[in-house]
Image 1 (spheres, rainbow, N blue to C red):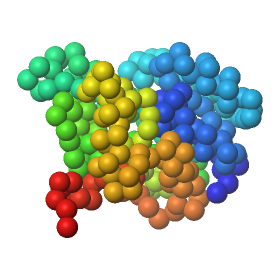
Image 2 (cartoon, rainbow, N blue to C red; image 1 turned 180 degrees about the horizontal axis):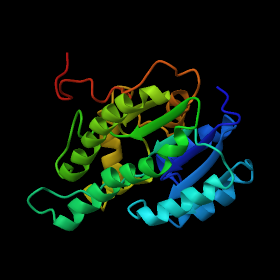
Image 3 (cartoon, rainbow, N blue to C red; image 1 turned 180 degrees about the vertical axis):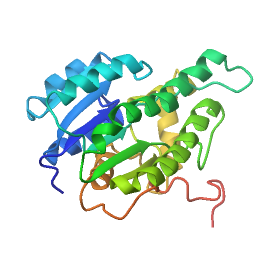
Image 4 (tube, helix red, strand yellow; image 1 turned 45 degrees about the vertical axis):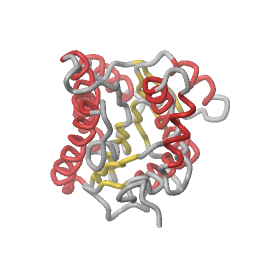
Length: 262
């Protein structure tokens, strides 16, 4: 798949799933702009530029619409349109519903839902200028399909992105913009490592091993595998898929229960 002359914007691309997505798009010759809140972005850009010249980034809080508008203006000084938008940025903090503060709730809502909304709204006029626009939202199997204790806020926001994806897909068909959502299961990322530490600070590797054993393919996914799925949805080869949710989870949502053997 070749994305030569395609312009892509990826949020949360400094590490984890986002970095896998960015790398896949760069390998396919896309011009990529990364938006990320973390200072880690500077290091990521420096490393990527050793191999790719067509990448740059902005440190931004996607909750800040004015900041986003300034970044859009800056990018559009170089580009005439945006072909691909990947809304990957997201947060997860474990806490039970009874103990969860409004601040933690709003932290999830403001970034996972409103942040995705803000970025899409800011770039949409320029995506409409593309002859084959693509918007790809990173949801999760958590929320739409499964959930664990402590994930109420995260699950709620990720489920909301499914409705956002489907409704937006209907609105943008006349602009030849395809809008789809990806539902990852466990991919080995800093977020998963963080959840493991929150669950068992003394032995997070034990949590990872428990997760691995519960996945039919007996391993966690890689950021490269997720990146390749995004690459397909961003490409011209994906021309008849819109408003859909695509699961990439190694089969983890297949078993009715993991405790019943044959």
